[in-house]
Length: 427
Ligand SMILES: [Zn+2]
Image (cartoon, rainbow, N blue to C red):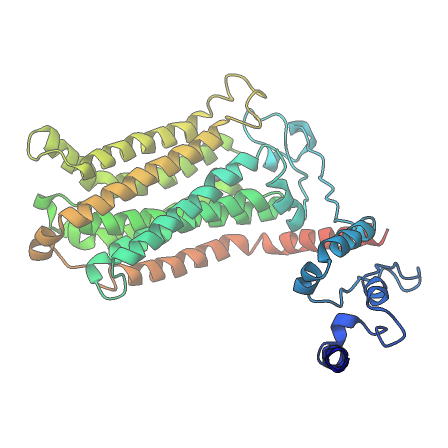
């Protein structure tokens, strides 16, 4: 009897201790008059508040692990069943798509007949549209996913190279940064290009700016790693990066300007924009062309680097061809609106080309290190990171100059979209 009594006393003490230490477990009403199970029911009950109070979010007063310990599975199922009907997941209303004759001229694409988004979409609509098939969806993803691929390669290089202290790696650092930035900017430009005509222009100004900075990244890395042996320390080698900075200014200003004449003179606009990108490409690639020619004439042995450079050149020409030819949609307008039109192929070709270019640059950098360090110019801070910073500032200034006349209308349109969104929510 004495033992039974002491066991009961111990049980009561433990119950008291539990109540004192963990009152939340037992719920507010789990005093002496209410049994444990009643406490559970009371505090796991999901109730709708009155209409005046609005919908109250149910709060679970018990730690999750406790639910899982003491007949928790049953309780949890019960709670979930009660919760069904109380919780309503937000519903997403996707906007309808438009045909070419339903959108303003500035949004129209050559031989793309359908799948246009609303020309005054909100920022949220634009983001949601990337998950909803339209004629821009694949354009967005074909540059968004490669951004992560290049970032992954960049992070992997960071673990093997000393980008902070080894100045020989700085040209590669600049190049890797820019090949992560240009597809990301392009993806953002395609996503937000349907907020208003003015926003569309500004989005593509940034896209062109990122591409022209990418041309600087190519010039810096080619200048230090890819330059043919016989051109080292020549005047071209010494001023290569400086001329490339000038090229970025030419490229950004010409390509941005081409958008202003697009509606009036579409052919002139296309020629200006194509020229804007071809000039820096030819300038950057001249040393590589010469090196490849020397190899064909028997001046060098083939290497991994050169084969990667050749693949890159092939894809670079394919990219240029797709950009200007508008094939295959020109052959069958309307057939390739969603999948397979030239801009998507242009994106894919550009990214594959960049991949081979990156491999070629890395192979040259590693294999020519000893020779370049004894015979060539060592990369300086101002010739690499400094050049990038100066060029970035100048190009942002140019984009600002081109955007200033468009900004008032762009801001007004964005304000109107916000008001209409609020109105529709209130209704
Ligand atoms: Zn694009």
